[in-house]
Image 1: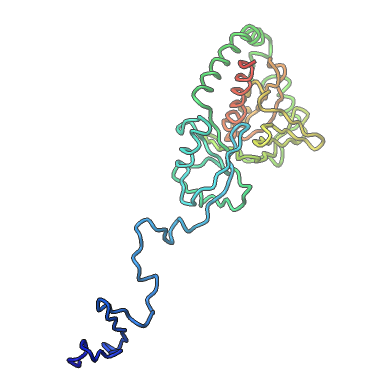
Image 2: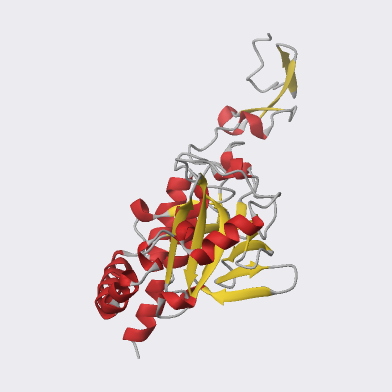
Length: 299
């Protein structure tokens, strides 16, 4: 290197390590002439988004609870427990009392990306009542039981009232005459399965032996009981009670009765219901008793 490099005979350029530099007299600042450096060489702020979950599209879906619809757009790694925590202030239902259903009961640890909610119309169903609603339901049941106590006692004192349904003439005739439907779903003892929103149970029959399909519609809050000729649509808030009894010699199936009026005489009977769905149906239907009681107290 020439000793006069930084003197009056400043050379316009030099080569150092095979890289060209401009020599800027002001402050002797050296800037590489080749502009091959990229943004990748720049430091990344610690809070800058990476190629992780933030880069993935959010999952859009709707949660149905009673008559309300709650729309969500969440990161795919969100767990069911985190979704429940987001639902608590919206529905007033404590996390511990929430049951989320999508093709069955969802565990808290499941991530929503594993549910394959590919459609924007995807729906989950929330079952649960707030603490206030649960207290109101308990009060309503106590009031109802005291009001109809005498009627129930009179019914139990009547001939067939002391017998199980399978031993009563009315139901015994249905079971013996028509038998189990050929397309009856498999019944599973000592098991509980959640009925998914809009899932249709087939292989049932009514008191006339006609094939029957059962469906609970969360979007309209209705119970649908359909034969080949007609579909009966009952608002869930008008169903006073749901009870069931196992079928003799076939305990994996039940007779279920939906009470449509204030007394047991208004019951609509469904035969050969798989026992694993009994608790799920009772829960999904009777939660709307809270709404009916709330409406009455506000009149």
